[in-house]
Length: 281
Ligand SMILES: Nc1nc2c(c(=O)[nH]1)N[C@@H](CN(C=O)c1ccc(C(=O)N[C@@H](CCC(=O)O)C(=O)O)cc1)CN2
Image 1 (cartoon, rainbow, N blue to C red):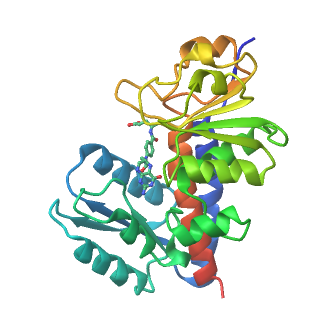
Image 2 (image 1 turned 120 degrees about the vertical axis):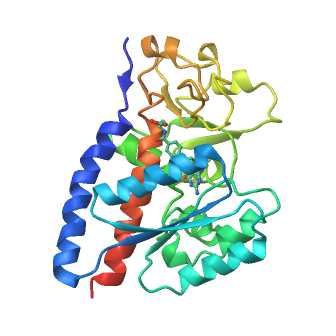
């Protein structure tokens, strides 16, 4: 067996072509352009890279972005007031607060200050709750990107046992809810799960979302499983030991070029949707 490669880079590129046309049509019909505000707090180099990748993606589809850059010593109150200003800015359709923020900041309070209609990165509790209940909401960008990637390759989810390893607020938890909403049977594992390899061995679909390089070993994963790796670590490795799985899995997301590009693409797609809602009148 040779695993089908779920090529996030290719799907994102294809979607960008469609989004460029939508943005152009919106400009023609309304005179307006979808605008994403990006907020970067502090000097973490990886975060700065991801934010500039998001701004570049805005440019590629003809959108604009507003860059807010705040110093390392920013307080929760200062960040809340920057978010409030963007909430009240009629030209801004979506707000991205790059995670992680410096440790003195109450990140949850700041995420939750983002107005629901501008939460195009899907980080608010309100958005999460609505998504989990099957109501309209923008999904958290990485798990929503994974769902879009699985859908693009017609991967069946109904009745399948999905094991999500990781329970973070913007990845593992929403991932589990999204899979559940598509009628998968979902197990969420985490750092205190006992017998992790035995649970992973039962999975038809494995999602690695732990943030530790190659923590999930290839030998834990049964032949024929669908393998989704949401990790990205220096050296181009993810959370799963992917090498041997190329010969045994049904399908897998590569690192790089799998989930990462879909994360950014989903943020852009959801900002276009938010722009369309505001500008198409
Ligand atoms: N507010 C948010 N913060 C963070 C999120 C998020 O979705 N919202 N996700 C991650 C980081 N992230 C986006 O912010 C991200 C990470 C990696 C990639 C990516 O495309 N990686 C490439 C490889 C990297 C490279 O080329 O340098 C790949 O996998 O192909 C995109 C987005 C944490 N913070």
